[in-house]
Picture 1 (cartoon, rainbow, N blue to C red):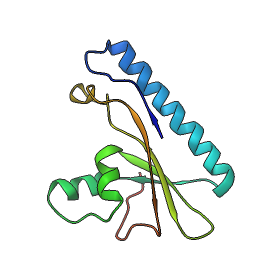
Picture 2: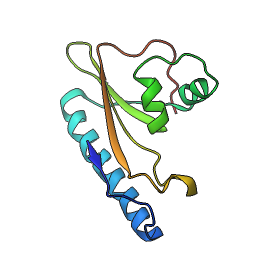
Picture 3: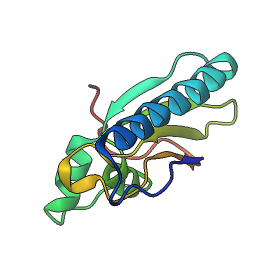
Picture 4: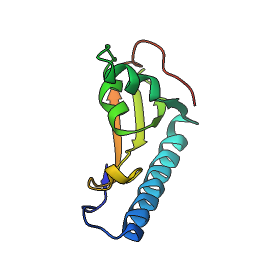
Length: 119
């Protein structure tokens, strides 16, 4: 969806600016989808991330999304598909600044099985 430039060896101010732009891009896309499908449901992916780290099963696409984003904003379209957006963790901690910041998306035929936590 959107990716910043490379952030390795980047000045901390550039990393902060890239994270701010990432958040702005996510907000703009979420606003656009909200016009079409209403307000999103916000899902906290911490539980899915923890389950994956423990080797427990995590329903797709949460298995991939939870490794990239701490939370997703999700909508159901008129056909029942589940559309989710999130901003990844890059630059969120001292060890994450080597990856670019990204806005990520997933579409599934139906909402993922199992419980998805609310923030």
